[in-house]
Image (cartoon, rainbow, N blue to C red):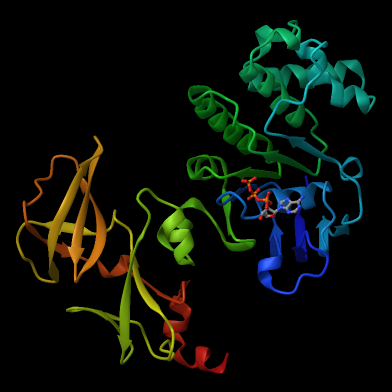
Length: 370
Ligand code: ATP
């Protein structure tokens, strides 16, 4: 498996791009570690497939380089890159048996039949297809065919990386859940470098140990699911991850303090800049709703209560701004007014959509010199 370096990588489908908006993939520099599972996550049209196709060699980037273990592969064709790919729809030979389909990539590389058998049996076991090996692929349903595709992607142990482009789209929801877990187990066992494109956050968060969140051609954040949940670097990430997403409230900043009504959050020296748009971000899970006023609570109007079975999502109005609060199942919700607590450790402040880094708070001189 390989480490993947993206160096000054960018792509535009038009010949003379002038502005960032002309790029399907804006300039990006990242190192993806050997043996890790990455998910490319973002809404439709954000550039996930463009990036995946550049890594696989299906697309030549208009700028920059792709390196596998330090070797420049930018101009190599997919078949010269030693990668495996699994697409949205099954790519299999209908006339062959399941066994022969799985064996095909290994026979192509002239491996001894004994080694092929061993590996095919191993992959069939991983995907719980041992009983199907003799069946003709043509006679199987869409789910089983896509499992063969996954198996063909996983069968070679010598590939630099396995690239998945929304591979579970055609799979029924129950099997989808099983296969997602399976892929995670396979990754944990074999430490394969995997890159997985999806627009489904649940799929990304359960599959990957590093999630790459993209929007409008930009890689906005790469992090563990926990990082993305607790410390979104960008308001888009806060919104996109979580259900409901993070609350963002426009706020004033004065004397190094973010203010909304009586709520005051110190933001450290040096972070205040004229013209910045500030927002206070907090996840619905971290807000606490009380029936009575307590120290450090703020009066809110209850607008709506949605019961989700295992919890309730309460919409409240605070200083004329709407917030969502996740409240445990069974907690009594006041009819008209409640009192909201904003635990300080979960408050994040954003300037023009970007998180104000705690390091900036601790080093007030740093930002002024940038
Ligand atoms: P989806 O989830 O819908 O597949 P995506 O995140 O994979 O979307 P891309 O397919 O990479 O996004 O597309 C990124 C942008 O590039 C979009 O604006 C798209 O319209 C554009 N684009 C993609 N392929 C081409 C192409 N061959 N020619 C011109 N523009 C393209």
